[in-house]
Image (cartoon, rainbow, N blue to C red; front, side, top):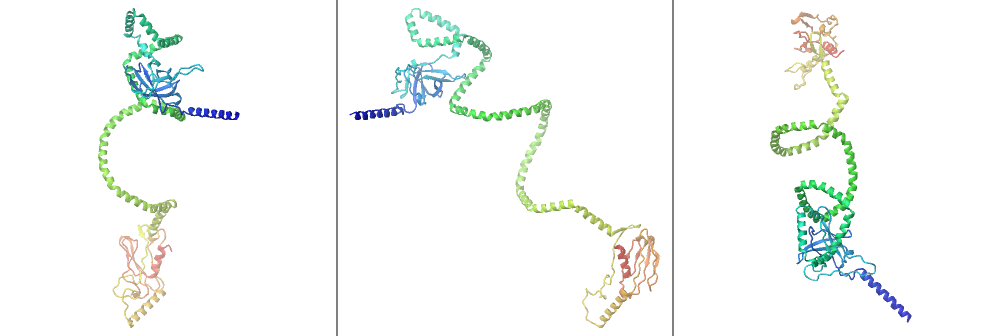
Length: 525
């Protein structure tokens, strides 16, 4: 029996825990989706959709819509999105408060009034079953407050409102002279408002010095505002438009504010570097300030220059139109030139290496030296002038011949072997042997060829007649050298040699010894 009771007690505890878990996890929550409260206000001036709904300073939703009730009151639909605040009771209150100086508002609510421990909570708000606001929870006007704005309170003491207020009070006194009961009822109904007024007056009494200073400072501030009231009115109009635009972009503004701390952290080193740059730029800016008059004068003088340059720029534009077509047509040529430059690169590199080598080793100077010394080695100079160092070698094949000459028959057809040809060859051989065996004849060169040396006496060759010297035109001499003892057939005819003497010409058949002597002289022998 005791065991059965114990099992029943354990089962009851398990069931209770299960029920608690189910209700704790929201299984019995009738508020599916967003929780909307339809709050009725006697006045909802300057309230717009999208503004915040706060509880104890925490944003729990926003105003989703505005409507007008049949009795001409404002219905403000509060969309509560935070799950922990979806439990408005019948003793809940909501108040419209200013959020900023530009006229933006928000709704501050208290879902239920605080109660002592153990007291039952007030019942939940009634849910609208049909009609306007179906499914929303109704918060009547008795639970809402729209405080009078401070600017409206201040307007009471301004003309002509002050005079009108005195008239209203006088007329009110006259109208209430016989309506004490009605006034008492009105005062009784106004008790909540008067309570709040008492609280406000108590706060104002505690802050009277601050308010006095505020009034004094406000007077100083309002004086220029009164002077520029047109601008202030325009500012208010534009502030209203700004508030509407800000309310429409609240999510973007919130996202920007969330990114602002990270941005400020990244901005700090940049501003530090900017401060260092400003310190370094101070001398430059000081010098620039000193040069500002000259720069100003330069800019003034630049105006006429710019005006004068306008026609040139216009002409340049016209030329650019023509040059555009030329550049387009020159594009293939430029491509070919690019290809040529690429192909010519190795050659240019080799040429660069060659010229660099010539420059570093003095190759150009050595080439000039070669040309110079070559010219000076083949040209001489004496008391009569310049002469050319040259040797004309006379052979049996020097002169032009139309018939075969012994020893120079290479360019003629070889005749048939005959006794006469053999005799001629034999005769030529004998003449050559006699020529080699004969002593060389010495040629007396002019003394002008050897400046500064005495002329050597010339001796006639063995077996030859002495040379005769005759005057020549221009002061030169003509030497006639007798022929050697060699046969006449070995000496070429018509050979002539030219000496440096002006106009002097020697026409002699020189011997091979004379030619060798002249060659030795010219070559430095």
